[in-house]
Image (cartoon, rainbow, N blue to C red; front, top):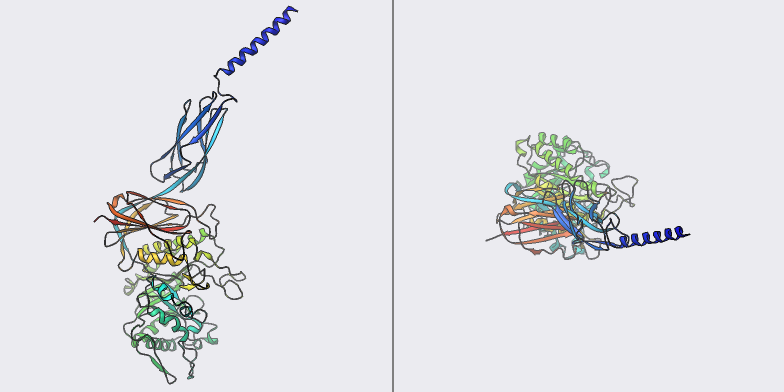
Length: 602
């Protein structure tokens, strides 16, 4: 009995001793302790190829935790972190470097743990793009901006319906506005001697207002012949006269009408109301002869060599744009060599068209991805033209340009995709366009084109710079993009293209120029698509760009103008003053373009 009592006493004493030891500290942690992690900032900004950035961490301890270690999860491939853990103190840090990672925004989790207790904090890592602008011209940048009209029975009343449209058009500063009369916009309807054979009513409802705006020098594209010159009265687009003498006579009458005081037919004289104040100097010979026109490349050469001398016989001062090609795979290689080798008539510009798609279902990534291929076609244009000494200095113009070429072919069906319903492509008027058109403008200008034409001015939410399907003729994002491209990069006089480096030229387009007055304009276009890049008219991915201008010297003042999803389409974007510094930052929440203008110190 005595041993049992003593044994119980020893067990009780041992329990008390162990409990006392646990309450007095030591060990690797305790459920009764606490650990709380907080970060000095919940965002970290670091730029590709540049110095690292550090985020400080604070640990609040309660009870008796052990040594605290920090870890980071979610870091993108290629980026690195350097961790200073708190250990037995209350503070630590994480230093981030972009390394070889892609630009973007990445959600991270920072964890503090002593092995038993833990606490987490969220951190957004923003890996930005770094660009450096350097002195030294790398050529001239000279791209004239313009727009287009298609006088026909479906839209010829736009200037009557919207009286202020002349001013809206003129404010774009367009050069050689393109006029493409088709259908009832072709002024000759019959070859007979009836009094109704000629009518300029529909054509001139658009042409006459256009003659008085912009540079007062439109380009009249003779897009179609009168219907009676085709087999089956226009339905086949097959010329009955492949010498094109009949077509040349029609072209001569157009020149007489607009430029030399008129012509007489059926006992009536036809003369432009604007003559002699405003005439037409620039003429385009036919539209997209490679599609829907039943012409071979050699037949087009014959047409061009026939019409141009005939028109010059009426007015020797005329200038001519040739080919007006519908560009897609293989067309440059098929159509330009025969023209280059066979043309004998005067050529003042070679023209082509570029649409990124003919299918509204194409993703944003697919649409952006077409631009490098078209740049390659422009380069091929130039190399082929160099084979004819008469064409080596002739400029290349892109006389039609928009996101999507598809349209309603009737009954709501797609013109490009048989059996598929037509869907209006809103990317022609959304923030997508604010990234797409500047990207096109920059890339094609660097490839040597000298004119870029919007298709077309007064249309709908897909094509128009002005949406005339609304009662107020609503301005669109595309209008303001083209408005500011013409002002930021005026041609003439053109500007010297500055050299630059860009750590993300796959998603960020940079165009930097120095004007004759020493001012610098840097255009930054963000065409980064949201991952996994399946968006169709998506918002775009956020991007931050650091622009290093330290090599350009000092500047007195600066301004920044941004066009994006937040732009007021009625009043347009507003420039804000910025203080020039060696490194300047441009931030995008999605698709858009920014123009940074820097004025040198006097």
